[in-house]
Each structure stands twice: as structure tokens, then as C-alpha cells.
Image 1 (cartoon, rainbow, N blue to C red):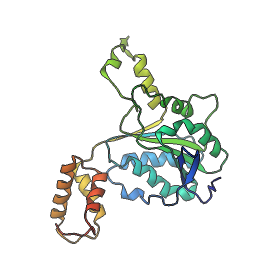
Image 2 (cartoon, rainbow, N blue to C red):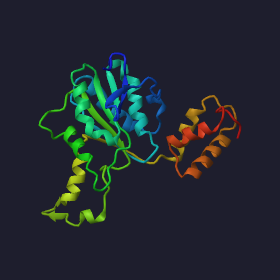
Image 3 (cartoon, rainbow, N blue to C red):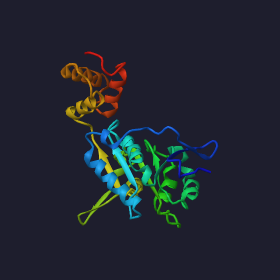
Image 4 (cartoon, helix red, strand yellow):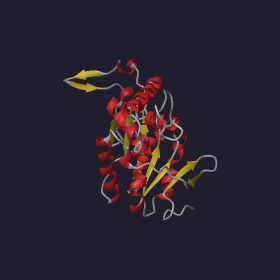
Length: 256
């Protein structure tokens, strides 16, 4: 059994069917995440309500890759672990075990966020059905000390195709979606807070780069040019690319 007084995060391991305590937590902090202030504020507000024992929502963070979705969830843990927040990471393939995980933690005094990174489902995938039941739809109410936070590149988590809309009708000015569309929307609708993350502007990308080089004393213009060249090769200007650029410089202070 995990001692949640001294353990702040755990990862579900399917083969052994147990929660493995995390000993080395990613140290990312909220103040390090730039260009997503609105999303940060809403997620913090929701989490503070949860920690205070007030009604709070399950959260879907969706949108462009590398924009800080998963980092934001991890930064929340670092900010509020000493206020009772705990994080449990579950892979999409292990969602079938959610009821068992919830049963294991429902009697603890800590507040648990169950977290699934890069959550999405393909056509014909049925793993989303137990998730729907856990979020909302079971005969048993979810415990008030558990929320579900997920990140995804898809707004509705399921693939959307043009043919799904063929049976959608407009009746008396109201849209009546096809059964297929309704099924797909119903999953994301169970997340009461849905935060969108969009591709970042060039200046935001450069601000993030600068945050990785706070003591750099060389020519900033050359630094920015090197960072932009690095981003162009990867067709992405975002926080992930900025970190990779920093990692590509051996000591973080090389000349350009």
C-alpha cells in the first residue's frame, strides 16, 4: 500500500496491477510556462476549488502539440502537493482499471487527479466506454476526492470524418446531430472544463527560448536566429522545441 502522506505521485503498472510510487517528479513550475496564461489561470482555479472541497470539473486540455498541456498538469502537482494534491498517471490502455484505482483511493483524505496524457481513440476503439462510465454515467457517484485530467490533440478525442455528418439534420433552426456525432461529442462533454491550446506565435517561442538562457551574455539576435533555424527544421515553434534547442547546446551558453 502507498503511504500518500509521503508519496505525491504514482503510475499505474498494468502487468503487476499496482500503483508504483514516483520518486523523481518532473520539477517543472507554473511560472516557467509562458504563453498560456489564460489556460493556466482556469486550470489553477479549478484545481483550487477541488482542493477546497468545492465542486470542480474533470478537465480536457486539447490542441496543438508541444504547447505545454502535460507540463501544466505536472506543474500543478509541484505547486499544490503540500496542500494535499496527488497525481496518478494512467495510460490509455489501462483505462479499464480505472474503477479499481478509484476504489483504492476513495477513502483517503488527499485529493487525487487521475491523469492520462495524449488521450485519443481510433475508429472501432471501445476503450473510451469505461472512461465515460467513470466520468459520469455509473450507478455509483465518483468520490469527491478524485478528478480526471487528460491531454489530447483532438477536441472530441475520437476521429472525425465528413461522412459522420451525413445524417445530421436542421429542424426548426436547431441542429440535430447524427448518432455517430452524438456518440463522439458525448465523451468530451463529460469534461466540464475544456481548455484549448493553439500554435504559439514567434515572439512567444523566443520568450520561452530566453527563459532557458537567463544568464546568456552573447548576442541575443544570434541566439534567436539559431533558435528559429532549429524550429524551422522541425516545423514547430513551441515550448517543446525551445527545450530541445536548449538541450542541443552542450552548456546552454555557447556562442552563435
